[in-house]
Length: 270
Image (cartoon, rainbow, N blue to C red; front, top):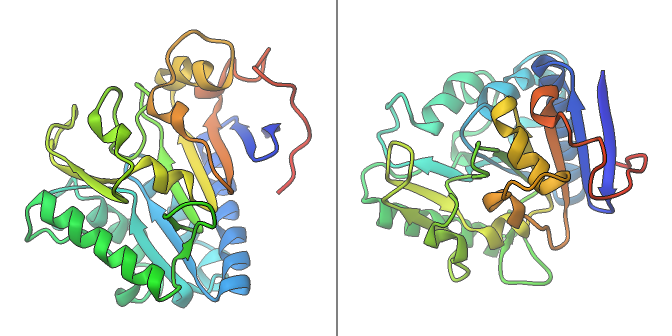
C-alpha cells in the first residue's frame, strides 16, 4: 500500500512498501500522462535518466499497457547519457532498448539517442540541436515563461548525494543556464564523460517524476522534504516553473519524510 501526500500545489510525494508497488504505480502514472498528452497535443515526449528507472518502467511492456498505449505517438529522449558506445553495457540507450524499446512499437525515428561517433562536447551540441528542431516543429512543447523546451515528462533517478541526471553537487554544470544540454568530462562516477539536461530544462517540464530507492537516499530526502539537516544537493534545486513534481519513494528512502515534514500534508490531486 502506498502513502500519498501533497506538500504544496505542484508537488506530490508517494511512498511505497515495496519497489514492485512503486514500479506499478510509476507505470500507471506514465500511462495517464501519455494519454493526456496524446489527446491534447497529439504526441508524448518523455525523457529518461539512468539508474533504476529504466528497469522500473519495463512494467509498461506488460498488460494492459503494451496494448493500451499509443506507442506511435511517443518521442523518447534521455535526460542524461554516458558518452560510450551504444553497445556498451553502461549505455542508457542500450539498457532502455533491451528493457523497453525492443518490446513495444515505438518508431525508431522517434528515439533520440546520443551520437556515439562524436566527442562528448559535439554530441551534446548535436543533441540540443535536435531538441531545438523538434521545438520548432511543435513536437516538443515550449515553456511559456522562459526559453526552454517543455517535455511532457522527465523521469529522474535520485543519487545518494542528491544528484539528478548527470548534475552533481558543486559541479559547474549546475549553474549552466545558457544551454539546454551540456556535457561533463569529470563526472564523479564512471564513466567520466556524459551529456545532461541542464536545470532550466528540468524545471521547465510539464511533469517531473523523481525516483528514490534505498536507505542511502534517506538523509538527502530528509534534507529536501523533511526536517533533516543534510544538504539536498542538486535535487533541492528542482523547482518547476509551470509543471508538477511527483516523488516516487520506497519506504527505506522515504522513512522520516512523512513525520514532521516541512509542510502540512493534504490529500493529493492528479
